[in-house]
Image 1 (cartoon, rainbow, N blue to C red):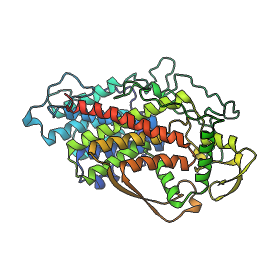
Image 2: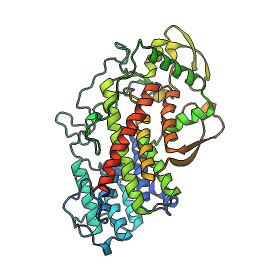
Image 3: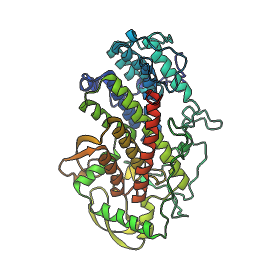
Image 4: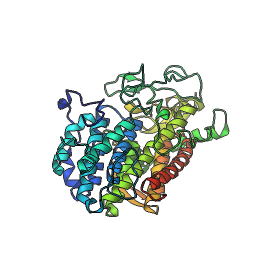
Length: 483
């Protein structure tokens, strides 16, 4: 067996029908380099994973990062200066063998095997793409003198290096055999029915499309224990504490959330929904992979450039998630959902009444974020905002990588489509002129939507930028710049 396929494809995988399929993307990516094409396959796997399971942004950020680490390591065999992250004991290909065709083949095998490992249900989709590229998906050679062999070795080394890295991907932690199960036994101070500490996170009841109530548990409450790639530790840049109940600062920030959410424009609704995502979400790491794809198309990247950019971009996203979860679980802070109910108890306020009901006068205890009932707010502590942290990190990294702040991306979206389809506005074109503005728009969207207070956003953006500069040093070492 080529790689550590502990988490192999279930025997009934043939019954799984993916929503996104390779055939649907071939025309759109035919003119792009092979590294870009594999980034599209990574997005396909992430979207289908969300559709099949649920949004799990921490987990998918790790998947995406490790795919591009393996791709980078395979590519490094064809660059005299590059230093692989996990692959060891191989010789560089001589200059006359450092051809584009050999690079394409090597990175394809690296991408193929890591994607199969992390998105096993879509193995058949990735196999189709290998065949489309003209490669034999059954070539399991480990001959480091061949492009296929070096790609296979890169995938194998990455998967092996990240086994037992704290993610519990394979249920390898003793006593916690379910993949991704919480081995820290986290128990929130507040239960879904009993609020014991206003400063701490409380699970909330959601309502399914069938009317059934359910309260999601905290998502991966151990993620701060996952080993980062570039950071020395999860708490390397941990911010100071958030404001507490009783402080003027927190009261002001909670009032700001209520005011913003009560007066949303169509453009703001569109921004909230674009950043929140819906079905087939690729979460924040995937969002910033898509922004990187836009940079690739805009600047007519060749394969080498995309290998390096996607590698740096996704390592940044993964480590930013780990850093954000360190802050989230260390402070275990409350969401605006509970804070608004506390500060405006027995008071009438202006707020959004729910899908199809518009905005008007409501009781403070009835306030809710601008979200459908099936996903009222993210099921984990608030500080720092994940959107702000990952967006701040990836924006800063792309700014460093390109040498400027220019993004120039426009997205057309129908406001209300994900939250209140009964109240659709006219199509809105969201403009993201710079990386910095895109990150700040992502962050403020979470305040406007009622998921975070401003402190979560500001601290998250700063935390993310600190992570990006650390990853930038790591990246420059591995491309051989600092040697």
